[in-house]
Length: 60
Image 1 (tube, helix red, strand yellow):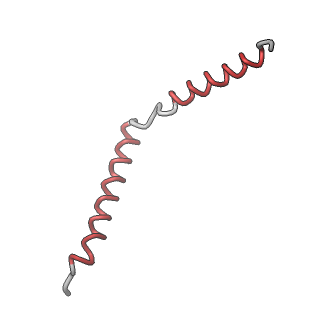
Image 2 (spheres, rainbow, N blue to C red):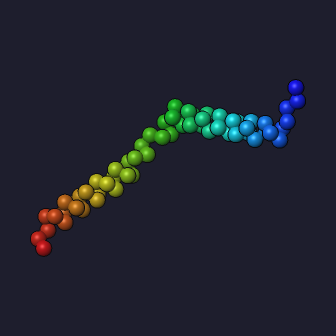
Image 3 (cartoon, rainbow, N blue to C red):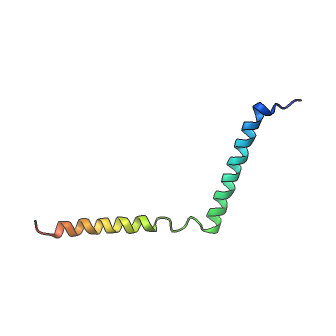
């Protein structure tokens, strides 16, 4: 059986890259690298909500 690298090679490369990405993702989840990512977004949201409340209380 002859395996043609021109045909099978890109599929093997894509499979290896996707397995590498999966391994990096699993490592990141298990090491805690993805925790706390929403803190900055929540601070921004709370600041914007606070600004909206302050603008509603101001007399026009």
